[in-house]
Image (cartoon, rainbow, N blue to C red; front, side, top):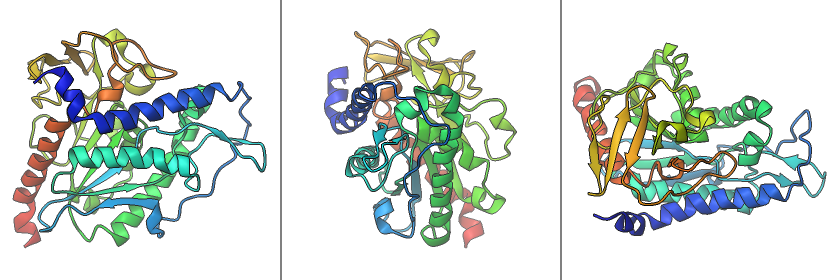
Length: 332
């Protein structure tokens, strides 16, 4: 299969992700470098008892599969509150543009990856791309605010929607960082129901590994584990704020943690660099998709899901099957 065919098959998802990133860059440039206030102005917090704060796709007709709880990547740009003149550095779920941006990614990832799993994703006050990166001194604080929303949504999901089902945690980019924080807050009972956590396009550091529920995946069918990968042409194309210092990596094509290469779409090769834990992808004729603000030639951050979509979809199904095999006796 050619690289051209890849893009035909994943066109909707790539358009959703790249259009949102391009919009972020364009809108951010219009802010005129306005200084960020010491205390951020905030939109109203989502009410997760409101069904409009959720994207839910019911694919599991038999109840024999699992849920995917998905946390979106950074899809929004800062905006000015016309009533107050404040620059808002978080997505506002009362704004149609912000909701559309998150919905586009939710729909694309659901279409590519869910298979027979129920797909659940909360709308949340994610930190905007320029809010995270234009003032990096506030990066951690703003990410923490976004993570608090998702933690509230996850609690609501467990109490009102999960009904004891196994689940997959998955997040991409900012969403991947939030998944790492969610893992640190799991109880033993909830962690037992976790099929796996996918931290896509973000880092899992050595410090993160102190959490008992962050156990690196080592093969295609282990469960209760964390899958982490970041794709580059060469290690110097890595984006430090996303993958710098990652201590975990797995090849999302052959699901190995050694340097055995894997062929993707006949023309690409994915190889895990065991020193940096980055996935080195070779075979592209051109450089693609430079991320606004932080992008580098040879970094494939915007392709982390669509490039490996078939492999990810199959792997989720494989891990769900393995979870049921281990837990079926306990459940019965």
